Image 1 (cartoon, rainbow, N blue to C red):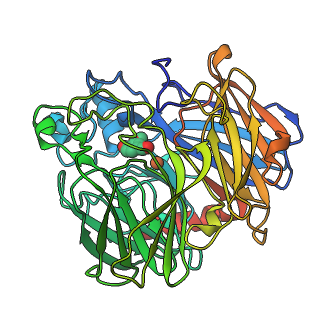
Image 2 (cartoon, protein in one colour):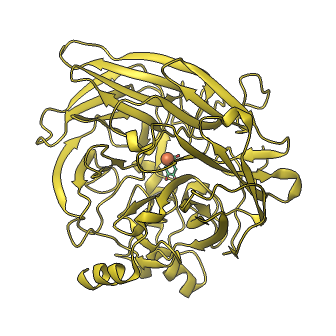
Image 3 (cartoon, rainbow, N blue to C red):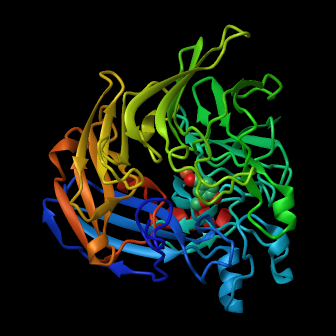
Length: 486
Ligand code: V55
Ligand code: FE
């Protein structure tokens, strides 16, 4: 694998902020596509310290802004407290992934967020997320950092971890989030909170995990919250030695945990399953009696950057994930967890129509190799999967391209599920990683893009993405009021 390429995917560190006005395009950019396609990834401010991992790069946010068929591109490093302090010192001050023991004393008390994993929209702001810290709030138009420690108006104490994969309740629009290691590094406490569209915290609870470790994503349904924890264990010995403080312990089981939403958390049930790995939720829902939790699952350690505790080498096949439907009979306290593999497609970054995050849904989208591609780590196709028919369609990118996570955009606010556009960025390996944005009719992904928008440069690194519709952009005066109140 090209060692400049991070996350088994697509891009290299870039280290430059870019603005491109009115990008050239082949084909017709849909004129009804109005809003911003935001992404974030890990870029480098200074070279990584020896032993550090690409997960610890600095957050770099980018947006393709669509208005009346015109596309403007902009990218900015997030001015986290860490970035600003390091910029002033002209060197790394937090040099090791999630290891505060390695920090320079000058940064004590600052947020350790890199803001490099995911972005969501909240009240006219973009929140840039890293799972060990509170969000960072950015301006939607300029991508300037407005608040490097976004505590929801003082409702979440500084130091509270906030997942990079909160869910948006399909009924209320509330943000449902958790924080892993909520009592500090190595803690098995998980904090849960729900924040309404006005920014008020309307629910919180605490539970305990079967073991302390990395919990990257979860599931929220109409009535339940579920976790699937995998043995990416916190490793205190590695922390003391100044290393990345996690390791994969294949001797531990994985667990499904289920609790009721809006309760006190005491009903949490953890059910052991065979050991397996994986990270991301595609979608989840309950039908009152049964929980359905669709996510990617790998046979073992999913991350090449996290060592195995038993000293064995990373197993690429064991780290390769496929989509599964996990389900559980909630009425039977003796029920076992059922697993069903859904498709023969490798699926590390699956997405759905985000309006269906907590309710039954039909479609998913992802970058993946074709089932017969000999190279198994590189996403070169976009797939639309259809749970109703259990079929999928693929579009294969040009031969030198690898693809980032795709994002679904509804055609309008009343659009049917899946009626809209699919957006995704491709990096040209034979052209210095210069990038194109592909725009598909999401109901005809197999027919190829409606339009291809060209950047003159590499797109900034990308992990996850979010759409902010034009009607969600605040009036300038309204933003000023929100800032004045904060
Ligand atoms: C992931 C990515 C992270 C991280 C933990 O895909 C998990 C998973 C970019 O950082 O810190
Ligand atoms: Fe993620």
